[in-house]
Image 1 (cartoon, rainbow, N blue to C red):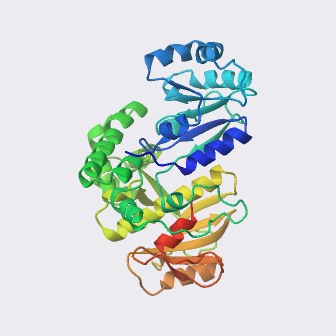
Image 2 (image 1 turned 60 degrees about the vertical axis):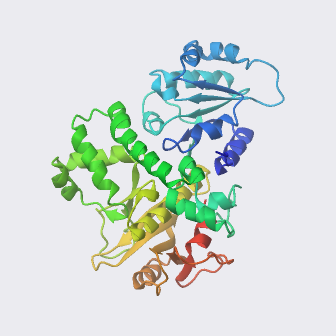
Image 3 (image 1 turned 120 degrees about the vertical axis):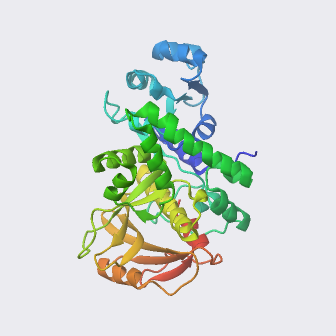
Length: 402
């Protein structure tokens, strides 16, 4: 299987050239973190490797000697620590390593989705690292791996191959199934990933005793992507308390099974404020075409919003709109606290949604897009002129994100 360069190669190269802070690279399992990061490291240590574990336990000076990092070099070498968070004293080790050697050596830290949970609390690493959240392949990443313009943020539109777009839709953006493009492999990969999250990851990370009921929740959520979550109804289906379901959903978000998009209610009269929408991280297994289309766009928007935040380009938020009159828009992206653009997702071309136009006018959002999956690519910039709501091809709009 041919390895395809990633947008995150550009991100890491820029980070290592400009910053002395450690790079923490988090994200779902099998998203390509280790493969990408190893290409930028002169040395690699994996806590799961017994030989590497001995070197890590020798402490910062022992690591330097064992890896030969005390030699004169043209530029500061980078050392990659993989799965280090499984070591109870990992934060203290990194703090000591950074404080002693950060002028001469760069550090990359990565691991499974647990890293983003374990980095909270404990010994402070504040100011010593920058976080980068890694996502699967998207249309924009296939089209352009350069860093976005810091002022304009969105990219110029760029066409990708129809075969690549179809592969994204059918096999998802995780590197192995996307690159193999074999239906049998994709189905087996999806099944194993779900089992890994619902059994191994949860058992390791949490004190959950009702594993059977939590697995039932996972199966229910697998069929509800792009839908609002009513926690009371889920609690009734799984036969646990509402607070328990809320806590379990938060755990599943931390493990990157899915993510929540919450209602945006600033300046929205009679808006709904409580019920979040749930989206799977892997849209390829979703059977309903409409839910799959909305989830695909939602995952693209989440990657863009988190990426723009991680790169320091501003403060971006992802939400959705719904009021008590049942007017709804699938997504809203806010920039520095103000609505920037609205997105309504459709499988086939339709007239512009009345709710989309209504909310754009009410919120004074510069842009509003009805993103249609089945429309052909158009060589035109979706963000060229602010104003009225537009029907745009998904292939064009998604290429302008991240």
